[in-house]
Image (cartoon, rainbow, N blue to C red; front, side, top):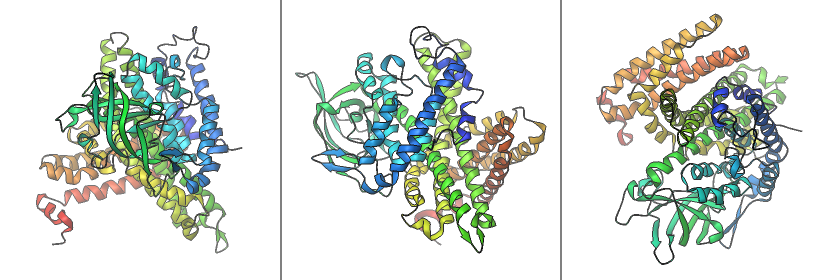
Length: 570
């Protein structure tokens, strides 16, 4: 029987990172529930044992049920009947298995029926589920929305909605409209308050809503009349039991076909205000989107893992010219680079998750008591790092995911183009990762601030100071040289016009990300020497990419911009 947690030692490696002691102590408030809640951990070792047990359960469900169902779910997909979504048979089996396993509400407080786990084991579960079926990961992963309710809703709302999520009810993040995709300030779904009924009602249309027929939805709507920007938007909670929303159509997608993507019609849909009016976009959606983007990094890594394994298995078995194709340099180089990109992406994922864990735990602690001076500084530090790393990770991990899927199909040759092999489905599923929850181009817009403020460079210098084993010093020297090249390219760009900065933003963000991932792999090698080969391969790839970007930047000037406008070849 397959287990997608125990068969992947990289997961256990990241789960045992040294920062976990601090993260768990903060999440558990120094284990204060150990004498009042029977399943609360007694100490760090007890907490880690719980994480491992739950991840093993998820790994088993993924290996034995979700992954075997993936092909049929992709083929059948959801259907629409009388304005309601009917999941594919395999999807419903997956949901039933997850509910039976008791692994919904992983990160929610125990008082609402959750497990009170940190973000890291939850993200690790998302990594595992995505490897099994990326489409189902969207349905399961939308429990992220419950974190927003836990962070910003009233206590009464938490008591009513969060236990339902922990028992297995599904959620939806209802943001996008036909004329408001990435530009959420343009949302026009109308919210009006009925003074007589003392209730908010919504009217309008939403589009491209993942799992849009979920049991509980977070909806962004315009609550302030005669407004056109983000300050007129509020967040609302919709309970499917109260009606008012109809699914008008299901989108026919390229990939993640098991996940229903809906167009919704709101007709006097009764809802509850979540948090304060006017803060829907500028506070709540920003928090929600950051959580969603972390989930897409995990999804990208999970798909990459599946692609790499399929390619490796095929290359070991496929015979050509009297030997398995893995013995050909053109193939084993591809596999080696795929593994390096996968491992680097995963290291960036869990570094980001650690930063999120630390700042969120400290933030929750601040609502209970005054933080000490050191704790306030720690909160500020980790929130800044989480904000820097989330768009960086989303951009790079999703692009790597697409590259790995491409190479996995290439290794399969013509067979990979056929539906006989899972890699065809994985290739299609990978494509969305660099598009939804903000395209790569939008992630670059968010990440470029880390370039222009010098924040990424500052973090590289911090990594540079970390103690390492003497035998790995040569790798640090490579990273220092790469940092110097990056600093020179950055200095050349940031003194120019805004348009010039925007033009080179992707190159600079990619350069920064490659160096940061290089350092993370270097630190991984300190804890496990087996990572040295992956580090070496990744540095060769990263250095060549950075050199290409640096050369392009060095050879360009303001006059060049016109040559690239509107596809001009003059």
